[in-house]
Image (tube, rainbow, N blue to C red; front, side, top):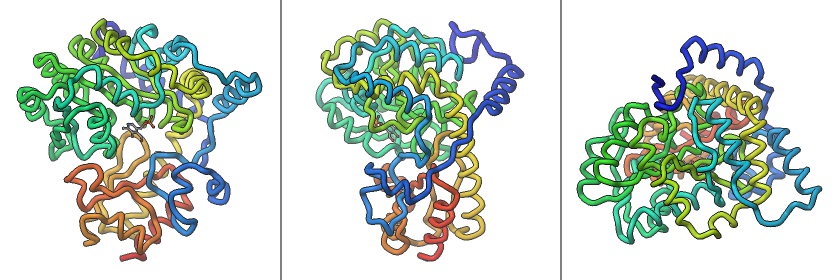
Length: 404
Ligand SMILES: Cc1ncc(COP(=O)(O)O)c(C=O)c1O
């Protein structure tokens, strides 16, 4: 039996190791662009602060786009193919292929739907599974906009912080659902910690959700960026209860840096889940960008080698960050993640107060995300985006060290 799902064949451990090695061999070189070129970008990362600030905050990467994505988008632009998107069929097939290759998750492509972005997907799914004023569990410290998305969907945030070991507090979530919360919104892998939730925790979450008749919205946008793909367990692969009560929302936008392209996927694994997705207004689909749609199909179909190259660059950047902090800023605590490119820095040792990102910006001219925005336990923490060049990372740590 697969550790993932009854419908999925087990890939033996040696097979997985061989697959991982083969992937590493095929990975293409991915390197961050030089700062002068990055400063020509017009996105939030490069426009939010004046040029003397090093921006290591919002989750955008400094790597150039994957060539198969550029080719797909340019081809569509040259074909003047700029109308409304027409259904989700190719995206479903592309994502199902990727999920099978990468994680051994066998999903039905005809149960994939599209919308503008993952934030919209979360709001639209929540709108259909809660009534106005219902509680929705989130697990702080967590991706800051979750609280706003719950409110936008008409829900009420019920924060059930992660345990001290960064595990989901299943007992407390059970209690919150017992008190009337109607849904749980998880980040898997968890932003800002960069940790995939273990399969057994996900299975326990699914079981209690089913017992309370509550839905789980699994935001798996960072899933493709799990460093060792075998460490990521898609929520919908863990059990029948997860498939019945879960809806997965994801996209290619973090792993291939496509946030501006505006296309996300919503995946159902049961008739109940599909009824949630098909209960949405058709405008939810039509708000997807057709160029984003083609970029997404290209990413999940032809993007593996670039992704593996990006993950190699991200891992080496994390190692560099660890070394730099140890030698130049030892007061800062950093536990390397096992997914994505975000460092959750414990800066309490610097005595820069509850919001060290504020001091980092003012005194160091380095923009980080304030830990406080991720929830109360973020006091004294900041999030740093290390999907950048070694030069930028080195300069950022030197500036922070000089700001002491
Ligand atoms: C966990 C998580 N969910 C959602 C988003 C936002 O995704 P989108 O831009 O598709 O709305 C992010 C962005 O960083 C994220 O980290």
